[in-house]
Image (cartoon, rainbow over all chains, first blue to last red):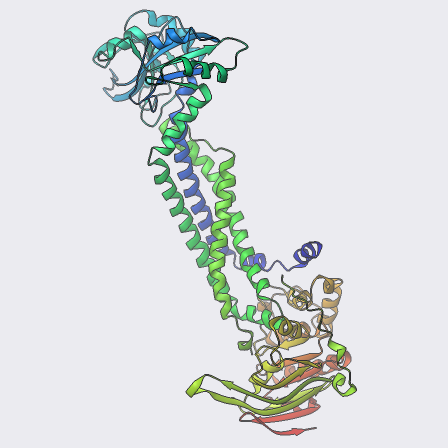
Length: 392
Length: 246
C-alpha cells in the first residue's frame, strides 16, 4: 500500500500535463461534460419536482394518523370512505380527535382576466383547524359564511389582480364549479403538477360545489392521538377496529410515503426522466470519447516510446483514466453551479419547488465519473496500436 | 502496477568473465516478416557482440535489416530464431515482464527524438528514472540537471521540445537515454537530420558519456561523417553481416 502511494506521488501527472498542453481542446471537453451534467441535473430536477409536488399539499395537513378509502390511491384521485368511520374511530383507545376532510379538483375562472385554472379544493369544518399552515387556521372563521373561500397566493398563473384586491381588503367574487363565491383571505401553499394551486372552503360550501358528493362520504380523515400514545400502536388498533373493506389506516409518514410511491411506481414519470438522464450521459460520453481518443491518437508515438523505455501498459492506461477523471471533475463543478441557477429560474416560472437534495450532486458526480471512465476505457483500445517496435 | 519488478533478474549474475564483459550477444539470429506465402526473411544467421564501453556503428542500405536488428536487441520484438543475450539473460522466449525489465536497462535514442511535447526537457529526462520506480527518483532533479548540463543544455531545463532546435532535442534525447546509466544505448539514425557539426558534436558527446559510464552503444547510421568516432563499424547487406571492421 505504501509503495502504491509513493508510486502515485512520484508519478509524472502526464494526463494533466497533456490536457493543459492543449487548453482549447480541454476547454471544449470540459464544456461538453458540463453540458451533459447540466442535462442530467435538469432531468433529475424535473423528476424530483414531480415527486415533491405530489405531497406539497399533504404536508399542510395536521394529524398523526390518516384514514382514507381503501381504494384511494392518491389524494387527488377517486376514493372515499364513510363518515361514520370517524365516529367509530373515536371509540378506539388513544384517539383524541378525528376530523373529516373533503377534497376535489374544481375549475375556477378569474373574473378579471377570464383565465381558467384547475384548483384543488379542501372542504373543512371551520371549527377544526386541520392544517399545519397557521395562516389558514387563523382565517377558518371567515368560512362560516356560506360561499366564501380562501385563496392560494402562490398559485401558478396570472392571479395577481385577485391577490392584490384581497390583500387590499376588497372582496372578490368569482365563479367556482358553477357557484359564485367570494374570496375572503389568502394563504401560501403553491402549485402542483396537476393543479394550479389550492382553495380552502367550509365543508358545507364544498358539498354545494360538488353536488354529486354526499356529506356521508369523506375524502379522508385526520386522526389526532392523545398525548403519551404511540401513533403506530393506535394505528394498529384502528385498523383492527375499522373494516378494511372501505377504510385504510396509515400513520402520517406512511401516508406521505404512499403518495410518493404512487407517483414513482404507477407512473411513467420515472421512465421519461430516466430516459433523459441516459441521453445526457450518452452525449457526455461521446464528447469525452472524442477528446480522449484523439488525444491518444496524437500521442501514439510518445506512448510507443514510453513502452520502449520499459513503461507498462498500465502506466499508459493510467494516463487516459487520469484525463477522464480530470474532465469529470472540471466539468462537474460548473454544471452544479449552473444547474442551481436554472433550478431557480424554473421555480420562478412554474411556481413549483425545484430543489437540489444533497444526495443528487453525489449521484450525478458518480454518474459523471462512470461516464468519463467508460469513454476512457473505450479510448484506451487505441493504445494497443502503440507498438514499441514501430518507433525506430 | 506501473512497475512490474522481477526480482529473479539479477543482471550481473552471469558467471564467466567473458559474458560479463559482453553486454549484447546475438547468435544465429534469423527473422521473418509476414505469414505463409508472403513470408519474407530479413535476417540470416546473424552473429553480433557488443562489449561494455564499446561504440559500434551499424551501416548498410535501407531495408537491409538494421532496424529489425535494433528492435531485437532492444527487446522490442520477440526473437523468432537464434539467441539474443542481454547481459547474460536470454531474450528468446522471454516473458513480457522480463522484456520490460530489460528495456529499462537500455537507453533509446530515436531518429525523430520522440520527446513528449507536453513535458519540459527535464521532465522528459525524468521519465527515464521514473520507469525504475520511486526509489530511483530520489535526487531526480540533481541527476537530471547534471545530465542535461553535461549535454550542454544547462539553460534549457524547463523548455518544451517545440521551443528547442533539432540539435537541442537530440541532446535532450541523449540525456534521457543516459540519465539512468543504462548498460546499452541503442540509437537509430539520430544524427540524420542535423548538420555536420552538430551531428559530430552530439555523437562525440555520446561516446564520451557512454565511456565514462561504461555503457555500450549500438548505433545505426548512414552518416559517413561520424564513422571515425566508432570503435567498430559493422556493415550489413540483405540481412547478413558483410564485414566487421575494428
